[in-house]
Image 1 (tube, rainbow over the protein chains, first blue to last red):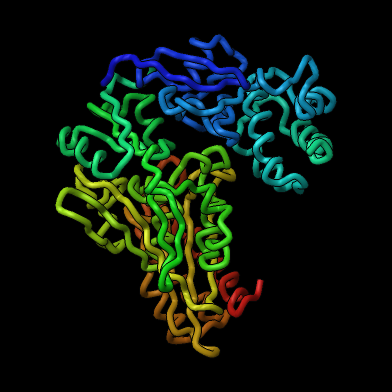
Image 2 (spheres, helix red, strand yellow):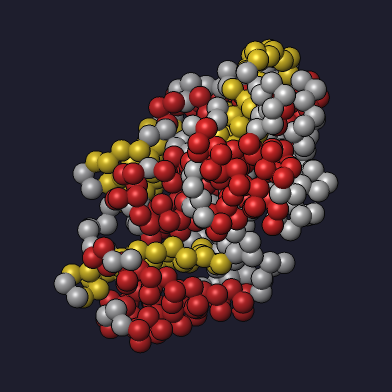
Length: 160
Length: 290
């Protein structure tokens, strides 16, 4: 049972199929097999958070999951945030508030913030800082990112 | 591909999982939330012949209150524990400790059973299990074994769980109402492993401290129950003087190592400071204070 197997899952709303070895990480499946290279792979051991995606609506490190574990799941990557060419309110806010510089951590930041704001729609600055400590950014010093999440929170609340 | 090849099994019952473990005779690893095992596989520090992925055993995920005990299925996610109203009202010590486990995207996958079975001495859950005098249930071919923390944790990353056993349940006694509690820890950055963590539980009768439980994480090979410090509180009561005496004693009792993160002397210092902080906080919370 070490050989490749077929998996079915939903990625960004569309049904997808894969033929994967059990040892293939979810992040590598997303990038290499599905060609969705918006999800970045950084540290490969769950520290940097760049590979964070939503699995069944919850933020998870896709470098700490096997692709076969996502069989039957709904996965959302950064490519699935914008709708019909319109940026997600978080993406809009990151743009407005200089929430990114090199962009490497951005997909992980966006999806972590996405899950966090669902749970805590009106967070304090301290709570935002705590949540975003899950993702490492080496460019911005986090100031712009925190401002962006603060700015997006009311928009997401209103959109509910 | 990062992990070395392995056989992969996805049982849907504990019995099926146990059969797989027996088949591999110690060469298989149980995959729960994967937040500790997957990094070891990615770097090939661990190369098991097989993974027995228990994530599809739905019967291992629950939080139930029964006869003064909270029973948690081993596969219960840390985030479910963090959000649980029954945990917040009955075992707020567990809620407070859970918020310190890794980060949000770690807690969505990480499980209570996985954290205990991994037995990192600087992790929060082993200290909480010890402070609450809880039990873990290990199921194997011969049936169930119920283990107290001192029977379960052996040393760094090592428990008495057999290679053909699965940790199935965690049992945590609910302290009587009015008890004081706190989990305080120091880490370099929020979400990092603690250099030192302190779990405190104060059971009171009237104004007297009937029982104190004081446990240090990160200051030895297993969570350290600091009985000598507990005795000071039980004998001298809950005063600022006894807190300071207990904290000083705690710093003497722990057996920390030096590593790249902190020296043993610094960990002793942290033990004293954080024991004091945790005791003050726990005392404020007695009888529902904040």
